[in-house]
Length: 348
Image 1 (spheres, helix red, strand yellow):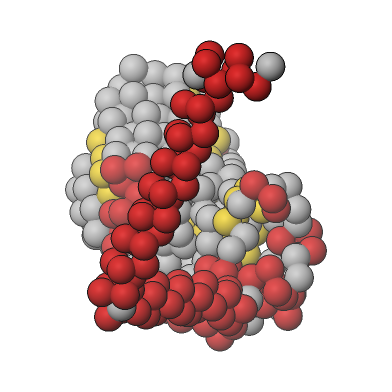
Image 2: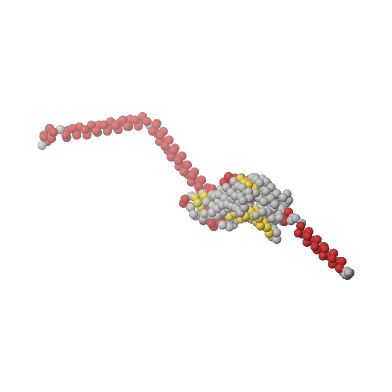
């Protein structure tokens, strides 16, 4: 019978422990926070979860807790419901969220609940018809918000209220290109930490004096406004002088007039001060009004003179008529004499 040597027992124990650990790894269930949502691709090393071109109508409810970047694209998510990203009931570490090209039409209040660490949110190329006033509530760390080619006219008026929130006080970049906006949808620029505001390719015809004053006060912000149909009239005066005296519009050289017809295609920067001078325009209007008043007074005086001298004018007209009648009778008498054949024979 073979006897064990002194070291054999310890080797046997180590081997058993290794075998038991391997069995435990094989039979133990996968942790829930490591699972990847269906139809998505997960890269834990980079913290990225990508879900593309699916038929899902809701945000995946089993987003891993380690996710720092979530990309949802080509889905059919018509509504972002309240707490759409808080399905697992925990606070996510997500810093980047891309929701472009998802046919999103409605954003309900507190839709981004549980994303307090979010830095970048991209909602471009959707079809927003309704944006709740509390849509962006809780995004205290948001730095960049992209809403390019996504806001439809029904939601344009609601967007101002949605953006007017203290939750976006750390917002530095806001992009609103291609939304047919007619004005800057920010009432109070001082509540943000904006450095870049992109309003390219909208329907802005003028920037009112209140917004110009806000821009003067927020010197750090850079506003991009090219491809807007500016109406180069007196209403553009405050904006014109801001454009000339400030460097806050990097694409100022690409701003063109669309109205009036005489100035179509001209650079806004290339206009003269007289072209947008409200004082001259008002004086010209006042001069036309004054001329009209003077002509009206002259007409009234003329009518009064006629009225006061109506008796003399009547006698003058009667005398003129009698004179014309006498003259016509003389011509008639001469005509009768010239046409009498007897008189003609006597003359021969």
